[in-house]
Image (tube, rainbow, N blue to C red):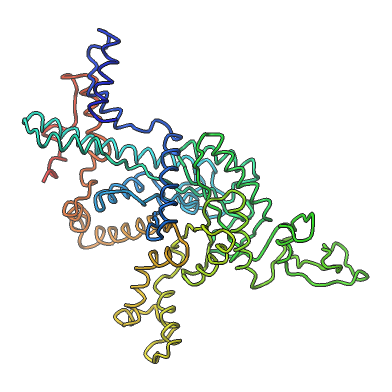
Length: 531
C-alpha cells in the first residue's frame, strides 16, 4: 500500500473515532505502519519463504542466479550486512543471512564459549533469529525515517520534484528483511524435540531450517573428527518433524536443508532395523565394516548380522560405536542426499573436507541421475585453508599438463615467497570465481560462509588494540576507524541515529507535539558528521 493510501486509511479510522482521537495524526500513523511492516515472526517466515522459492526457481532456469549469505552472530552484525548490501548494490536480491550453530555455541551460550557439539541452550537459536529480525526491522524504520524527514523538508521548501521523488522511494522501499537459513544442528534430541524447536525457530521468523544427520548427543562440528551418523529412517523422521512444524504454522513454502556429514563420518551408533533385503536400512548396514564369523566361534556379547546366508560381525569400538568401511563416504553421501530429497527435503548440504568443484560436482551429478533438479547449499568454510588448497589445486593441474614445477615446493605453497608468483595469481583467480563456477558446474544454489563475522570481529579488534594501546594511541582509532567511516559513508559513524535516537524523537513529537523533549537538537554532537 502506498504512503498516501496509508494516510487515507488512517484518516478514515481517526474520523470514525471522533473527538477522542482528534490529536492523532494520520500521516504519523501511516509512517509508523510503514516502518513496522512485519508484525510477527510468522509474517516474516511466510514472506521470506516466498523469496527463497522464487530464487530456487530462478536458479533452476539459470545457474548464474545463485544466492549468497554470510553468517551473523548478533542482530547488529546482520543489520550492518544488509545496510551495506543495500548501499553498495541497491538491492538485497539473492542475499540472505546465515545463522550458524557453531557461532551460537561459541558466542551466545550462557555457559560461555563452547565447541560446536550442541551443548548450548537450544532456545538460544530462536532467540538469535528473533534478534536478527528485530535489528533488520529497525534498519527499515531508520531508513524510512530519514526519507520521511527529507520529505518534510521538501514539502516545507515547496520542492514538488523532490517531493515526488521521495514519495516514489517510500512507495518502492525495499526492506532489509531477507531469508535466514537457520542451523538446528541435529535437532537437539529426538524427532519430537526437533519439531518443538523448529516451531520456535519458525515463529521467530525462520523460513529455512538446516538439519544434519549426526547423532544429537554425539554431534560434532562438520570439520572435526569423531562424527557419528544415524540410520536414514531416524533422519527422515526429523525431516518430517520440521515439515509438520512449517505446515502447522501455515508456512507452506518453508524450506528444509538436509545436511549429510557422511563424507567425514566413519561411525554409526546404531545398526539399522531391516525389514527386507535391499531396503533403506539394509543399504545403510551394507556399508558397515564387518568380518565373517564361524557360528561355532561366536564370542560372548558379539553382535552379528545375517548377510547372504552368512554371519558377519560389525566392527565395534570400545565406545560401543560401529565403524563403516573406509572409502564408502562418498557413496553414503549420495544415498543420504537422494533419500532426503525423496522424503521432503528441498535443498542439500554436503559437508566436505576441501573446496573442490570436481569432488562436489561428481557427487551432485550422481544425485541428479535420480533427482534432476537437486541443488546444494554449500559452506565456503573458514575451516578450509583456501590459499593453500587452491595453490595446490593449481600445482596439481599444471603438473598434470606437463609444466615445469621445479620453482615450486607443493608442501610450502602457503609461503609469502609465492605471493607474487603466476601460480598464486591463478589460485586467487580460481578463488574469486569459485562461487560462480561451482554454481554452474556443481549444482550449488546457495553459497555461504558460516563464520566470517567471528573472524572479522577478531581481526578488527586485534588491529585496533594494537594501534590504540600502542604508540598511535587515539590516532589509532581516528585514522583507521572514524576517518574511514566518514569517508566510506558508514552509517554507524552517526551511532546515535543508528541506535534509534531519531526514531525516538519522531515518536516523541507524535505523542507530545510541541512539548516533546527531543535529543536531536543543535547541540547533539552527531551533527559534526553532517558533512
